[in-house]
Amino acid sequence: MQLNQHYAELKESYLFSDIAHKVSAYQAAHPEADVIRLGIGDVTLPLAAPVVEALHAAVAEMGVKETFHGYLPTEQGYDFLREAIRDYYAGRGIALDTAEIFISDGAKSDLGNLLDLFDTENTVLVPDPVYPVYVDDNVMAGRHIVYMPANAENGFLPMPPAGGEGALADIVYLCSPNNPTGAVYSREQLKVWVDWARAHDALILFDAAYECFVAEAGKARSIYEVEGAKDCAVEVCSFSKMAGFTGTRCGWTVVPQGIVHEDAETGLRQSLNRMWLRRQTTKFNGVAYIVQRGAAAVFTPEGRAAIEKNLDYYRKNAAVIAAALDEAGVWYCGGKNSPYIWLRCPAGMGSWQFFDWLLDTAHVVGTPGAGFGACGEGYFRLTAFGDAARTAEAAKRLTAALKTL
Ligand code: PLP
Image 1 (tube, helix red, strand yellow):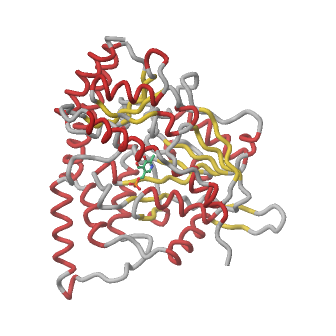
Image 2 (image 1 turned 45 degrees about the vertical axis):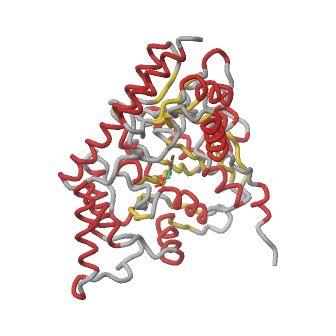
């Protein structure tokens, strides 16, 4: 027996445990300090009422012989949910076939599982800083990773590399709105990526987990808003941030039927959609009927209204944090089309130095940018997912503290 050696190459992720450690040590030393946490990426509002009602109704159905559901008719997901998702895209002018939509138990699983479809000899291109899962998924498989710097110069939105190793990449990860930077690609920028991917026979893995936060005209919520994307891009999406499903678990992945690859040597033609269906029917038994019913309720008129109300709550939090940084004259991006605000640490502080300073001075906790990649050093992430009153209090303290520098 031999183990997968690549697991030994994974870097231990100490980011959130280090933060928890530092906060509890601080709290122990300063029991009177009222610490506010703006570091988490988890939602805090409960599921919306129409979702809860749908979950209850589905539970009741499962307890009655005539309406009980066993194995799914297809591992790909129930028609009612795939049709609702198809219509969600159609409302934005994007035509998808339900055969291209696969229900998942969340974006994280599919971001890793999709890699089953690609050779381990492929090179992957990953932005830095980045949601750490993209890197670890590929380290586990032993794939070569090339990083593309995201920085203030490119607005934290890297564009296709003109040369070097990156130009030869086979798989590219794009996350927009981005975690951790909150930056969002415009349709024009994504068009450049799509044209590049088609010209280079590369595949884009587009993580749209935060698409529901996009508010500005011209910013893309889906890569399929761009012509040609259905030939070269897979989109991964989630109910987690959109509808508070972080603990309920449901998402979807779009694998277009137009992505067909012909091997230059053997002439073998393979459809990515067929491969993914085969993979899912073999290794996945679908998402619970009850959960899929809850997810479908998100797309009803009552569901949409309730979800928008929750999103507005988080958007207001983001605006409150942004206003505090504006007042203090601190550079940041994100917050407008994203629940994340990415700020440049003031007074030349490093990410962790600022973390300690902010905890000590304002009793506010955020996430050091260095934890998301080397290019995140000198930056800091604050999230809008907290309680509104606590966020307002944190923002007040933030401005007061920053003004002392
Ligand atoms: N993609 C990004 C960029 C994320 O930040 C997260 C979670 O924080 C996920 C995917 C995971 O989403 P899910 O809860 O659907 O697995």
